[in-house]
Image 1 (spheres, rainbow, N blue to C red):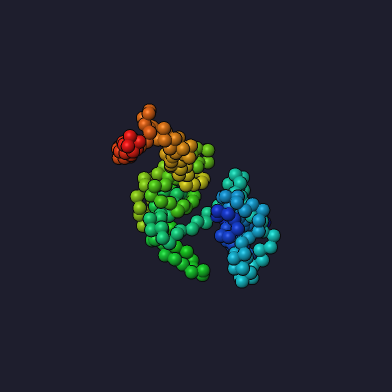
Image 2: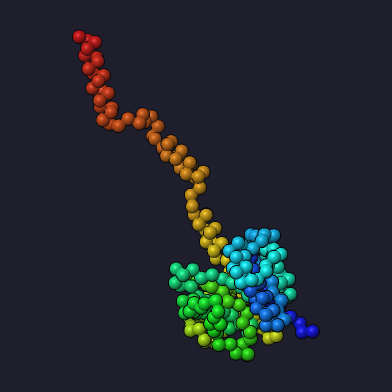
Length: 256
């Protein structure tokens, strides 16, 4: 019996995009008699143990696809070994005009293309070519939606991790082959890619450090409240002059 191809669909929460893709792909493969095993998972783990979102359930129901028994789960390290393909499902905000689709191959070649260069296709479409892949550069490992300031982590089969900025790869068209991005050693290959969040965390820490705390604001107010010179009554010169005149008038009335 032919071994089934195992595909894992991955999104953020594993209650909308990835489970819907899991069941749609399973249904389409079964209709064509293809040996395909599908599953799905989320990167966040926010909905572990929950069912599918009602919107996704409704779409699958309209297509006559049974999705009963689904339970959301988080991506596991073992998934990299258990599945032949991990397909990440990302969303591009239409207002994000500077977004790129960043793709990497097993041989360490990468290509960066504006997301707006990819036309929108309908439900019955055959998709859009993402790169001109050649055998010598290896299979496609992954695709990420990135901003020019982002950095990408390339994870090798040997366990080595390389971090590089996406701007090191010039923007090109959809059907180009790409350029060298993170070259694996002989006998090694890239097995996964991910957007690095280290810079975001560093900026968040810097912002928190630079923001004045409530304690420091209170200390500043207290210091200002105690900065009056010793013996200063806080009266202005005009107030002092008025008090002197009033005192002289009172003395004149007493003498009279």
